[in-house]
Image 1 (cartoon, rainbow, N blue to C red):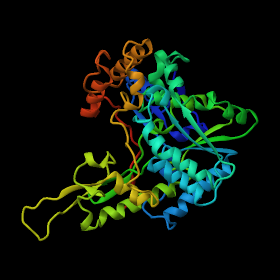
Image 2: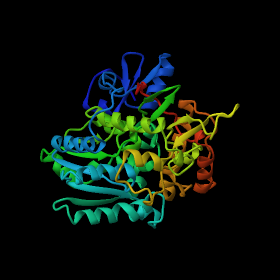
Image 3: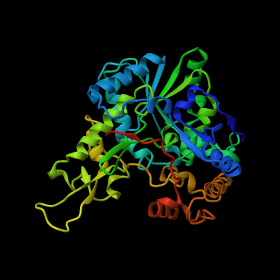
Length: 420
């Protein structure tokens, strides 16, 4: 693959990698290869022309609900046909509600699963779809005349993925964070589903709306900042989509958009305000924990002095907003008791592809493993990658859950945008 000279396209809003000051690519793996060869630094660029000039320190006066409505209306006004990919999780649920509550028409609500591969709904990818997304969508359709419901099985796409295009040899260049088969397979949806192709050929602007991503608030001393991570491909838009940049098909990240920076800023200030003055009754509750592991890796926290009276030698304790705590702040309509399996521990050997990985003798599976070995060599990641898949998916899941650093890809970050 050859990197390109720095140019601008509408796909740049999902981020790109810059090697030195002149070589641009949408692929992290390619960027690191070029960086190593030229001995020039690489960084991820994510809408800095907008975010560096935005006033992050001033909390927007609009309510969060008003900003969600503005964002939904903004998307509706730009496109002819809107597809909201609704998994049943908190992020996409809030996206869908932002349209519905404000009487903003959605052309289609869609889900994907791998039932034919798993042979059951009780699997990591399928359970949330079957228990939450499908029934909630069906109920909503009773009051949404004209909205379509689409449920897509990814099994055939995943099964043939590494015999398609140059994926058998180059699939590692088509992702930046999530190298799992189900993720790359999703990028083929718009070209494999006839309805979408017919709409595009008729001149319609078709848009996939993704629930990406949660606000990331961190503390540095007495100051707080928000930043973005190059995990965009985890939510639907990766290097392949950016490189193709085809007419008539569009993607929108509902939350992380340069078209509505106020939304992220409002979320961030609400989180910061909570961290500055958390209720004492919520410390070590389902909302605020001293265990980073219990936060489901939201990486949000501050140091809070835990003592009933001044005691010499008492140390501060690091506290973190849990996933439920964060959802409560930024998604007012979310029910924290909704069934969910959360995010997989590994973005490579993920249980979402368990049915496919179990075929340890398959040619495509062997090509996939060889690609992952190459990936880790290029990225210089720590730890060891399994040399074979003979021990099956259960062992790989044990490794993934036990040591995420050896089976995941390190992020690259945007600049810090200071909130105070």
